[in-house]
Every structure is written in C-alpha cells, then in structure tokens.
Image (cartoon, rainbow, N blue to C red):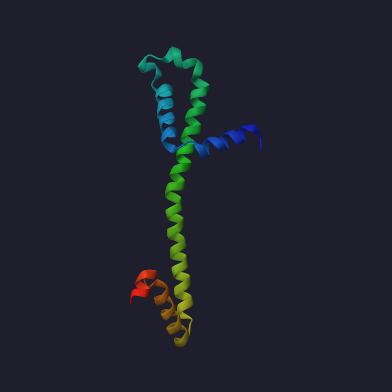
Length: 121
C-alpha cells in the first residue's frame, strides 16, 4: 500500500465526522466567499490545498452519510427477506412440524428469568 493510501485510510478512520464537517464548512467559505469577505489575496495561494481539503472532507462526510443511512436500510431489507423466507418455509411444514416449531419459538422468545428468580420460585 503506497504512503498516500495509508495516510488517507488513517485519516478517514481516525478523524470524527464533526471535525470533517468543520473542515468542509471552513474550506467552502474560503473557496466560495473569499472575494466578498475580502480575503481573496490571502486565499489565492492556498487555492489548491483548499480544493483538496474541500473534496476530501466532502467525500468523507458523504461516505459517513451513506453508511449512516445504508446500515439500517440493509438491516431492514435483510429482516424482510428473512421473514419472507421463514414464512415460506413454515407454510411448507406438516402440522406436527408446525406445532413443534411454534413451541420452540415460544420458548426461544419467552423472557428469560434471572438465576435468582429461578431458584426463588
């Protein structure tokens, strides 16, 4: 792995999204509002660095947003698929298998008692 890939990998994993958001806002202000703020002469030599920081922080924020939205969405899709598959499997069982499966699920889903409650009763 080249040094720049290792550096980018470390930066994306170890810098929180709040700092990336701050860098994104600061670089966007410097890039897009330099003339109205009167800092155009100061910002012009750092224009390339500003663009690089803006693109990098924006891409990290976009990746965090996709991950934030994507994980629950994938989990919901997986749950729907599992439920549909289980329902099809359950309908293909004979009555004896169904009754055994229902009892097994009831036992599995029943709230577990603590060991102190178990011995007290």
